[in-house]
Image (cartoon, rainbow, N blue to C red):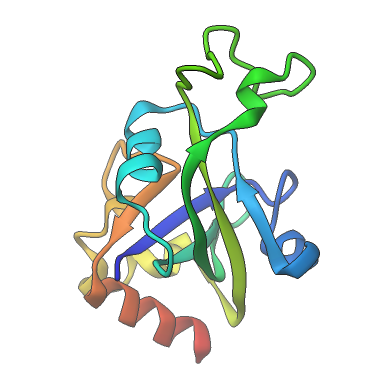
Length: 154
């Protein structure tokens, strides 16, 4: 099993939106970065777990856990001219962008702000805390995962 951190702006799609989705499941679409695309297409597997990170909010932070329930498949929003994630260069016969399906697992009783993550020496190497990291999906080590889950459940 692998662990991930996946960012979403809560005014676009929050952990509460995921929890309120049919079967508590939704597709994770709209990622338009090749590194992220490759992770979703090639590395994320059914059963992997991800931290749901609320970005571009005050304060940004980790809200809970979700599970990957469908492995990478073409992101249909890239083909829809009416969708904000439309990419005219993406072709259904040779898709450029991929997405995964995620299911709500839990919302932490304790929201973990980014500032709190930065205070944890055990998380010093975490990708989200590295200067200049702007990827919307990053891998998380087992050690980092365990520490964050403990913080969120306290």
